[in-house]
Length: 330
Image 1 (spheres, rainbow, N blue to C red):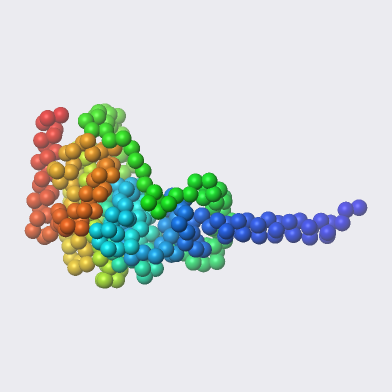
Image 2 (image 1 turned 90 degrees about the horizontal axis):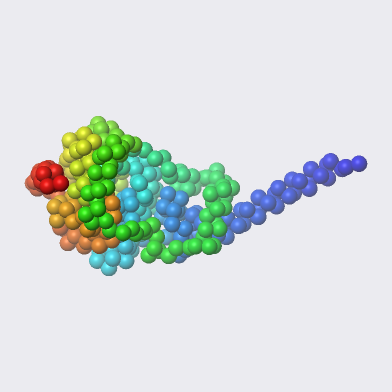
């Protein structure tokens, strides 16, 4: 006759052994660097930045969406004399920034923040960051250890670890004049950013609750360098085709006026003719070349194309006239 009590104890012992083995496996590989820093990364920004921010040595970060992913910390450090990390997040939206930036600032390490600010970040929500990777409670630790995604990335860290210089980077062929074909296909399909709501009041509210609130509450000694990325001219034409251009212009003007009030914030606008008309520097309508990434950092370092209360209107008017010129010629 089966000894059920012995069977139950053996089963409990097996379960405990498995749980201990999983915990040791995760603790040893620590794919999201929740326990310690490592020079081997997995390359998933939303899962990894929380631990990296907690355990690495840095005094500066560069962040933004995929438009900022190709900024090289080595270039930033060489020009500015900082110790920087790239904490860009593909498709970053306001809710990503709300968790990530507050967490990074709370470490007390960061003194300089370069932020590429995209309009679409406030036109849609993702809620993709897992908050438990940005907190320090026992329940959050449990969620990290006993998680299929964690175990999967333990294997990824064994098979294909990344170095810091390759972290969060991507590359695609430059499209040049074929961008006009992409633009026409977008217009003809009738699917111009269907999931993005460029309503002024919505974008303003989400910006106020996240980025503006974070800047306001952060230590005034933190140096913010915030810039508008150079999308191609075809991207701005799509905004007009979608009927969102006036709301976006109004929103951009609001951002500028709101942030210029802070002495520790510098604003830069790279949505200028010399940048956005060079279609040979674009991978698609939004994403520019690595060369542009390097030039943006060089220009921020030299304080070029910096926005002030006196030149903001002139910068905005340039875009309007530029869109009109390209509609006449294409």
